[in-house]
Structures are given as C-alpha cells and as structure tokens.
Image (cartoon, rainbow, N blue to C red; front, side, top):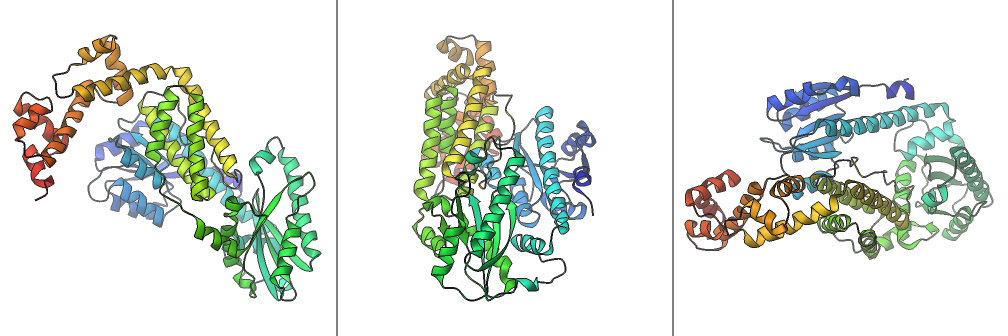
Length: 532
C-alpha cells in the first residue's frame, strides 16, 4: 500500500485537446510539462477521441479548446463530469462571450483562459491544479491508511463514505434493536476555530467524542463515532430496545448541549432503522438533513425538519451576470462601501430564498470566477486564479461566515486594483464606449474619440485595447454589425439602406465586414432570421 508521501510524488497525466494539430503540438512542446510533474499522455483532435483516451490513459487533467468540430469543449466537459468526475478541465477559448464563460463555470471547469494564451498565466493555473490533484490523492491514500484504526471505526468510516467494508462483515457486538445515525457540527466554526492551533483543536475533538459518548450513555444508548471532516462528526447510536420519538429527542438534546468553553453544537438525525447493513443509506440521509440547519438554526434537526424546510424554500435562478457587472463597476470606482453593499444584497437574496450553504458556495464561486475573468480582460494582470480560499461549507457553516469570506476576497481585489491604478483607465474606456454607441452611425475615427475625451490618440488606443482586448476598429465593426443584424431581422429596409444606417458608406465593404463576422452575407442572414 502506498503511503501519502509516495502518492504526492505521482505524475499527473494530462491530455491536450484541440481540432488543430498544430496547436496541440505547440502546447505540448512550448512548456516543460515534466518540470511541473505532468506527463502529456496524448493529444486528441475532437471530443469523442478525448473521451476514449481519458479512459485508456487514466487522465487526471484535460487542456481543451472550447470550439471544435463535432463534440465541442463544453459538451466534452459535461461528458467528463458524468463519466470521469475526478478529471480536471482547463478550457481555452478565442471567444470572450460571457455565456461561454458562464457555461464553463457551471460545468466546474477549473479555469477558463482566452487566446492567445499567455504561457506564464497557463503555467500558474496548471501548477495550482497539480497541487490540488496531488492533495486529493494524498487524502485518498490517507483513507486507505484508516485500516490501521479499530474495526468499529473503520466499519463506520466506510459506511459514512458508502464504501463496502473490506471483509464484508458487520460488527456483531454492535447488534441492537434500533439504530440511528447522528451527524453533528460546531456552530459558527470558522469564527470559533480562528486562532486555535492544530494541537488545541485535536484536544477539542477528543472532548467532543467523549462528551457525545457519555451523554448518549445516560440515555442507555451505545455509540461509535468517526470524524468525516474536521467539523463533521458521524455517530452510530445503538438502542437495545425500540425507543419512542420523545426518548430519542431527549437524548439528542442532551448530546448537543454546549461543551466546555461554550462551544455550541447542532446535529441532524436519520430515521430509526433495524438492519445494521442499512447504515450507509442513513449516513447519507443524516448528512443531507444537516444542510438545512442554516435555514432555521434548530439545534436538533429531524427527518421531518428537512421535508418542512424544503416545502418552504423559494429558490430562484441566481443572475450572476448582473451581480458581476455591479461589482466590476464598484471595484473600478474603488468604492468599498458599494462593494460591501452588493455582497450584502447577494446574501440577503440567498437567505430570503432559502439557499443551502453548498448552493451559496456554488453561486459565489460562479460570481468570483466570472468577475476575475472580466478584471483580467480589463488589464488586471496580477490576479491569482480561482476564487481565493476554497469556501468549505463545513468550515464556513453559516451565511455570515461565507459573506465574510466573500468580503475578504473583494477587499483583496480592491487592494490589487488600487495598486495597479486601473480605475481611471476603466472609466475613460466606459465613457468612450458609451460615446461610440451613440455615434456608431457616423464615420467615427479613433483620434476623434480621443480628442473628445481630451487624451492623446496613442494613450486612448492603448487603454482601449487593454480593457476590451479589441482594437477601436474591431470594436466599432462588432457594434455596427450587431445593429445591422437587428435591422435585417426586424425591418424590410434594403441592405444598402441598412449599411448606411449603421455607418458604412460603401456597400461592398459592409457586405465584406458582415460576412467576416457572421460567416454569411446580409441577405443570407435575413433569409435565416426573418420570421415568415
């Protein structure tokens, strides 16, 4: 059996996926992957081939383009998530479309980089992913080492993880008339744990284990317990006779009384059951019931607590795009109070709609990743990748804990932006974009916009490209073609009239630009988009 130290040395196997072989070769040989602890196991030129090679070579990490013939990067990621959920994905795109980025985030893509890829940026992202994969392998190896524990603890540990016990035997001395699984946590864990050393916390865990056992014994309940997380204790409670609900509730109320030092506990309990080999199912049940503590703060959550809370929830789709836009504006204004208010509004929405903590974490991660993508596009080059500290809902086990973590991240971004001085250039570009939107139908030149802004043409061109990743001409053409598409789809105006309306005085040039942006002529576009 390999130990954790050996596991951490394991090479990470990576697959490069792009429908252009020259790009695969470029990515393979531009970077010294071996120095990063990565073996490039192969290259795939479409999604189907990527899935086959992932299975064949036991891939840990995929580096994939988003746009490919046949199965594209997004569909490939969805397939991987279903069939090989451990595989990490770094996606590369030549498209800045917010919708692509949002889809990628919702598929749990590790990072989303824009072409042309900055090599240093890619190496930074890959290093972070390699560390995460190795840490996961260390944990898995550590779980194998639990065979050194007593049989009782090992048996419960496997039941918690829904893994069959290795010798298929159930501990006979735990036999009783009735069983229940109790899942327990320390309240406001992130606040309480601050400043406590690992050694001090180990002492608290021992106190916790002993107090639960003693308190249950007072109600004639035998028990074994296992930590599945530093703040998640599973306990199998065994009764020698069938107990009424009231007796169980008294025992549970006793079990969650505050410990020495005022440490507050809360728990969830599964339904009672009579067959010991049904324990895995009830471990899952107790874990899921525990998630509902955030909604009503009850010290003891029963199975019916979950059913009642679920019927009262009014969850809605969270609009991350709007929230990202508000945060971008507030960050560039360097308005800390505005940023905190926007984050506060987010969490008010979560509370009012009854979001569970894992749902809050997912919504916050989506906002964080998309926000950082927007800021990188605006020229903030010192951003780390991902969303800062991982928001573990067992550690940050309250709305307030997660909100504090989100505010810490926003403060970090404010400090970075202040250091880089991006606020002034951002608002110059925003003002320019608004002016261009108003004047797109005229023959507008970059130097004219610079003169209107009272800055030099060279400085305007520089900050505009930094902020939008497009030249002035590229941006104007996109703006005009978008307006032309709307007019073609909604009016009966002739094509040359539309060309003039959106600022193109030469008809042939308009057709050429339109085709380069859409892949079809204006007439072909109208034929496909006008409703008959």
